[in-house]
Image 1 (cartoon, rainbow, N blue to C red):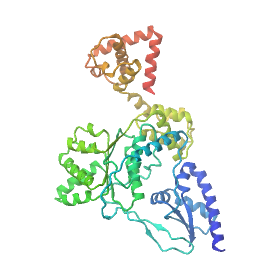
Image 2: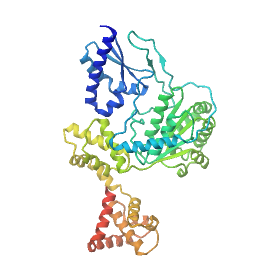
Image 3: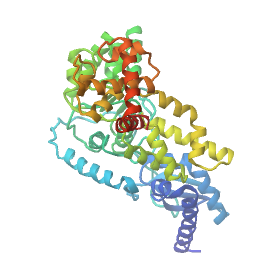
Image 4: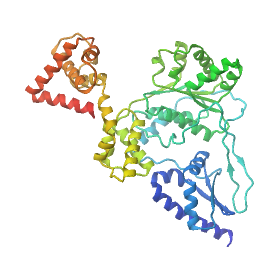
Length: 497
């Protein structure tokens, strides 16, 4: 068999193997991981598949290589192993927006373009330093196999490991996070420093860490010659304290002030540590002065980090501050769609809608609930249904029922009756203010586990007898006025959903 016939035979076998992989893992996984691979050759029983990036290679080797070998061996008994390697110029696929998220993806594209249009500051050129990930090295070609590129990542001792799931491709974009997503893309794709630092902030489980990892993945993929350090604020503190203990602060300064990109997660944990804050401030200034990129995340905006010194707060606020808002119902549905596709599972629409309504705190808990539900259904052979969801997630749903806060109740009631939130705490006695305030007290009693004195304190320091009177009054009015009762019940349903 000549080389042309052998190549044609391998291509036909690969087509059949791909069809099986698509059936087994679903379209989403196929497009992300299998489709970018091409056949590079066969030698000594080993098929070589080429991919465009080290990240895809590592993921395929971990999750798909054994199955590919098994399927290919069924097509061709001569195939005993599968090698995956990086090839310069191999095709790269852009992720396609999925169904419900197409509009959000289009909006994000436009937003990214607007962020890209921001003026870039020219930075002084500098000599290359040793990289945390070395550039790819050409290898001698084998017979019948084109010259390939391999890479052996060298992990920087300072940097924390990156989660392979946290990439831009796997980040679900919606209104609450589209600006932060666009800004993160800009930093990851630009060779110039346009804003320094990039400061990402938002509540727990909203995607800050995901974006931080995605930036690091993209930077290491695009520019393996650059030294990228990603770490938590706690690890930064630990490294500094250890340097102090061993009287080795000079080495500490050299390590941190020679990086190309420094990424610090959860910077709020540096709060109150005066010496560590001082060192971080000087490291920050040194990197900015050299034109190096800094990316920071926190649970609050720089100005709200009260335990961090004013100088450092001012420095952190001097770049681009991008907040990630709490998830909307539409975004939660998109997250569930994406998670179900990644898991290769068909989840009924009503089940996804139920979870999106009930689990509203953050994406992490939402994904965890779906994983738990799907695992239970598969392990015990049950149907994925609303009934199963109610039963399997009963403890989680009870916790969410108790998790409604008095502040949320006050905000929702104030919006409904078109008064200011400050009126909930004021001494005003006008009926237009008193009645909504009583409704909010009633709902606080019904939907939270707070005591009457605690509820009173949340309403401008009122006595518990005032709360008792409000509850009794609302109950009386609900019995007398069906329209008023419907208003109160609507508010309750909205708060419980």
